[in-house]
Image (tube, rainbow, N blue to C red; front, side):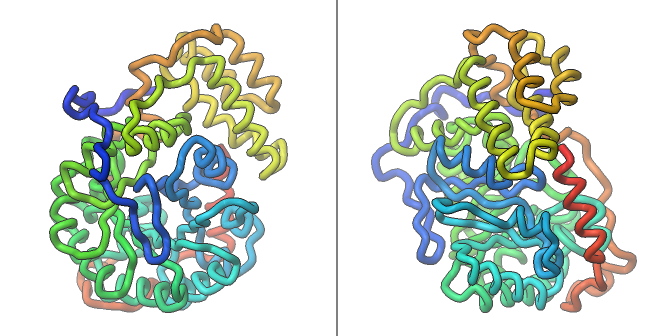
Length: 401
């Protein structure tokens, strides 16, 4: 499992807990979020089992994985399951993926009726099968279309806050984040989250904090900074450096749900406790597997757990050789048989704190629809980006582990 590219450890000056009153709660309409920390919506990751686990470690706003509007409105079983919640999950937050204002508005209205308390709109997905149809991070290229989508969600959601999440742009020569911020502000969005990389960068290199600062200075709504939050200190230093109102945590919490405890401690002025040892992590993995099984059933739940096994064990002695067995486990007992190879009192390895879990460091040439850049002032939704069957197959693939 590769370590992060060009990601320096925090300096001693960075390792300072929050001073009393240094940071304010994140305000999103009627919601007040403390600490000002948001779990990033991640496909195949931020389902209810993982959200509930993270929530038990610390506070914040925990967003569902990306839910396709068309799949949800068509009543696709898996899509509805991924958008679902259990009693006690509050505030309940769902991210919508859609490129048609009618679909987005209709879904927002349905989610509010179902008790959702926060809606996020995905305009940052860099996946080729999305951008080549004009969806995800391709949408901010057309500000008028972006405005129609945000407006539809805001009107349909009523008092429920709507936020949007974007990247810097398509590539360094096609930046869209400032236009997106102005659209979000004008159309009534409660905040904008900025993953400070372009779609071409994917997850490579370092997030550009200067872009977050630039967006903070350009809009009056809260800006949430996203990118390279590996430790609690990264969150505090990002807010201190950029002036953003909160942070979005993505890859840094994969296999490390206790990161939210560390974030809560640091924002509350307490020095976070050391990460758990391997024995405690094994207990957390059992808990996580049981939650996945309860939610998806044993077969699908354990297939989901396979990727988590590799993320939880990154950096521990022998984890590389154990990975081949962990990606084949079919039961919790299978998982435990592999995990017993590592002594339970083994401390969490320092080199795993900033390990690059889940995403590689490659870049890409972003694929857009033919002629897409010729009419950037067009507000027409892309033609049927995906059929219901394609969306269902895509979501099944994302859950495959």
